[in-house]
Length: 105
Image 1 (cartoon, helix red, strand yellow):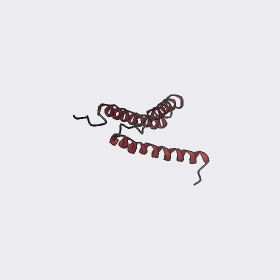
Image 2 (image 1 turned 135 degrees about the vertical axis):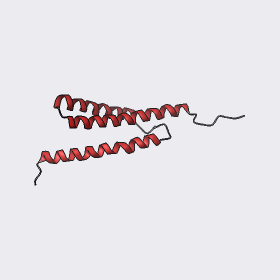
Image 3 (image 1 turned 60 degrees about the vertical axis):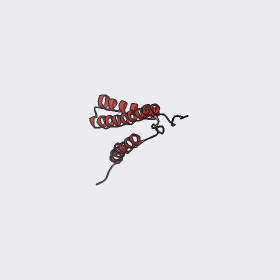
């Protein structure tokens, strides 16, 4: 069995997308466990990834009629949203908690 270039590219696409889908869960877990207000998370970067995945999902569904790509991109979009929402929640909660103990006289 020989694979042509399109088969190799399709296999690589599938493999790396599977890795990408799995890689969201450790990131979501790390943000959930973060004690510093998720300061290491770039909300703007995750918003770009969210938007890129959402637009890919729409493009795949509407322009290409490729529901497999659309669903994969939709799942990526949901995972990006999870990271963003958890990070924002951590930042809001971190602002409510005093960073140092009150001074007692």
